[in-house]
Length: 214
Ligand code: ADP
Ligand code: 5GP
Image (cartoon, rainbow, N blue to C red; front, top):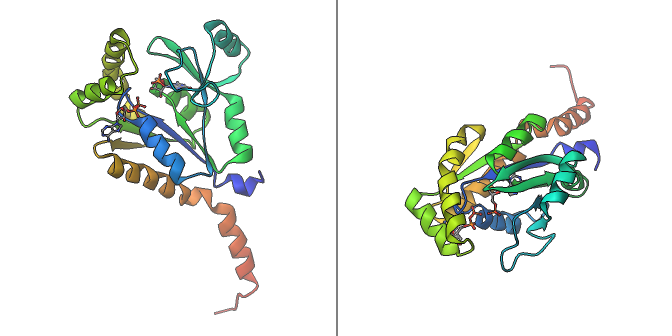
């Protein structure tokens, strides 16, 4: 992609405690912005029913994940809910070549690493309306056994405590309202002045030939 196209490239990090609704909200974003790429992470957790290798995640075993860490293949990686999760550098490079932006669904540890190496990335933290509603949603999804559910609910406090790492906080109360707010963040980020310097300079150069002394 030419450098001036890259100026408009948006990197959005979406994080939340498990069950707050980020997968649901990201699916809405995907419909609204078909020109954005959704980063497919590597993980050592087992696929849930309906999940496909290469679509929701690249499902790998611990040995393969650790080999990738040693070979420096990750833009970021972390241990989350006692499993490995990571974003391959290749994922980011592919997006830069073929999309107008990339959305990362990663935890706060990954967000911190991304922001250190890619400060232009924008972070959105999604909150549930209450802890009771978080538990209702996580249990209602029905994808986790009791031990994993309790581990995820127990980790929510530490995750929420890191809200300060993010630029935006969004409460996922009503799904339509929350999806509208998330989409608005993408639109606002696309309008950021720093993403339009080349366009402004180009227009200035064109306008120069019409310049008259006052
Ligand atoms: P996460 O990806 O953050 O773990 P999910 O997107 O899987 O969370 O959502 C957890 C559950 O909550 C799912 O069953 C989803 O359908 C439901 N859910 C998501 N957003 C809302 C909402 N605004 N109101 C009610 N239920 C929701
Ligand atoms: P889940 O198992 O519910 O799909 O995801 C569990 C947690 O792992 C979520 O908080 C999710 O954002 C996070 N996660 C998913 N992929 C990555 C990744 O590549 N890196 C990091 N750091 N976290 C991830």
